[in-house]
Image (cartoon, rainbow, N blue to C red; front, side, top):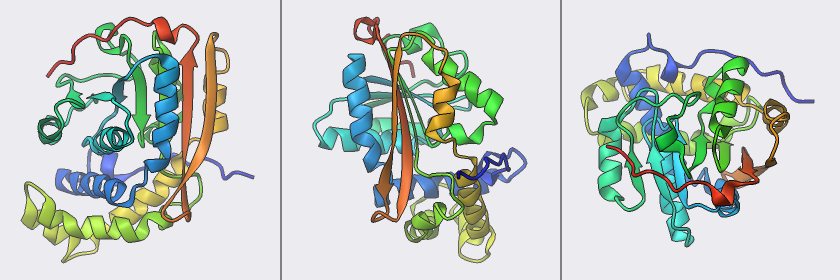
Length: 274
C-alpha cells in the first residue's frame, strides 16, 4: 500500500528562507542530477513522447535554475535526439539560464517573462510538448490538478517526471551524490561563495535543509495513478507512465506521458523570446 501524500514545506520554495540557502539547495540538486545521471531513465520515454507528438520542441515549465532542462537536452543530444528546450518559470531565473543558453544555444533558450503553468500563452505553447521535471510535487493536489490540465490545453503532448518515488527512503539513494554536490557548491558557485561556505562547510544548516527537503520531496511526490486520475476525463489523449531506476538501481523515479490524438498536426512553435 502506498504511503499517503504529505504537503509539508520545503526550504527551497519557502519565500521566508534566505535566498542564498534556497539557491544553494537548488544548485546542489542540479549538480547531483547531472553527476549522478538521475534523469537518464526519463530520456527515452520523453523521446517517445516527442516522436508520437510529431515535434522536437519542448516548453519546460517550472524550470527553476535550469538544471533538468540542461541535463536532458545534453543527454538527448548524445543519444541522437535533436530536441530544443525553452525554459520558463513563474519566477524566471534569468541569471542562471543565460550561461546555460550561451553554452548550448542550439538546444536551450528561455522566456524572461513569468510564465504561469496553469495559463500558458498560446504563442509559447504552440507546437511544443509541455514538460515538467522535478517540480509538480511542490504543489498541493487542487493546484497540481489545475497545472496538469493547464499543460494539456492546446498541447500536442505532455511529459512529467520526478526523480523520486513516494517513500521516505527514496531520497537516501541520492545521498552520496547529493552530499558531494552540496559540498562542492561554495567552490563551483558564481556568487556568494563565502555565505555558501558558512552554510555548507562551517554549519549543519545546508545539510539539514537538504536532507529535510529531499525527504519531504519524496513524501510529496504524486503517484502515476494519481496523475491518471487528474486527466481521466480529457478526451483524445493517450496516457502512459512508468518508473525508472537510478543510483545503481537503489533509487527510482517516475514518468508520466500523454499525447493528443491530433498532436502530429499541431501548429509549429513560435520563436523563443529572451
